[in-house]
Amino acid sequence: MTRLALILTVIFALVGCATGSALVTGQVRTAIEDHSTIQILTSMPAGAEEIAIVKASSDAGLTQHGGLDYAVEELKKQAARVGANGVVITGSDLLREVYSVPVNNSSPIIGSSSVEIVQGVAVWMKTEKVDPYAEETDPYAW
Image 1 (tube, rainbow, N blue to C red):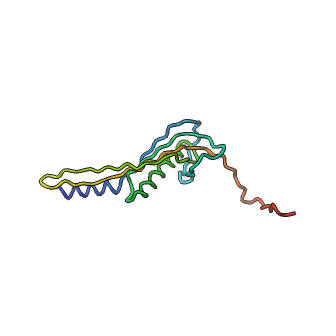
Image 2 (cartoon, helix red, strand yellow):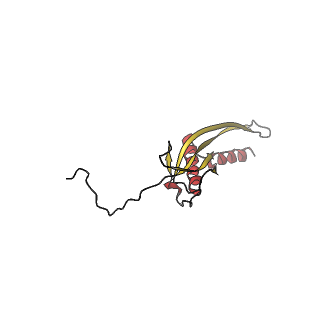
Image 3 (cartoon, helix red, strand yellow):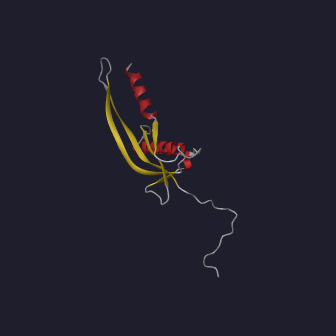
């Protein structure tokens, strides 16, 4: 039984998961299929439209940075669902906890876990489409 409890603890610590939510505060747009195209920003761009407040947490990853990566990916997914093409990060936090699993006739198994929490504002930024076939102009040409 002790061995099984230890194996299950290690599996849960390594696998983990990421969850998220979005609170709509503006006009929702058509969902974006590829969340990897969502831009992560540190300040609100001029002319950006606020769509939602997004929040994500993750207890996955072998390192603190790995947990942060999973949380940011989930934040992008939440933004993509409401049609945002950018997320302005407004805060992050790390929650840690220590737990003890009692084992019959033996010392308890003690472990710890951490949850990375990231929040931001999902925004829509107007983007200019560039024509790849347009001729380049030299601003210094006469």
